[in-house]
Length: 139
Image 1 (spheres, one colour):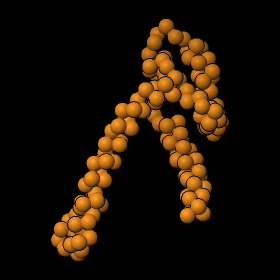
Image 2 (tube, helix red, strand yellow; image 1 turned 60 degrees about the vertical axis):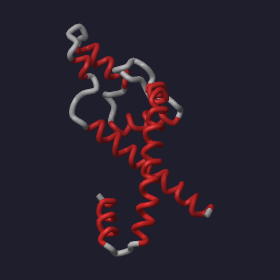
Image 3 (cartoon, one colour; image 1 turned 90 degrees about the horizontal axis):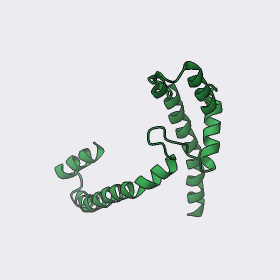
Image 4 (cartoon, one colour; image 1 turned 60 degrees about the horizontal axis):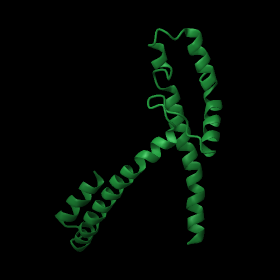
């Protein structure tokens, strides 16, 4: 059991790294500009926008920005939200109780439905009920 658990944990590390690389790359290559809000403000000159872009590291290649982001994230710095003007970690912790309540409720409801329907499906194996239920579960 311990060997299996260690194997699964070691498999999850490269998986999380790959997922973070893919999501970071998609967001970095997405259309639009993170400085778009500043571009609409006529009081901010192009030189000031470029200085802000440079200070945020947006002028650097994607792989350097990714390494800086991972380093900051591992050290506990999740960044700063431009829209709410507050640290991202405080926004996450502010919304975490509601998220856990919704996820927990969905998990509980799913378990309440899944166990009896799974037992019925096992009792009526290869019947029309089992086929319909299996098809619905796959959808």
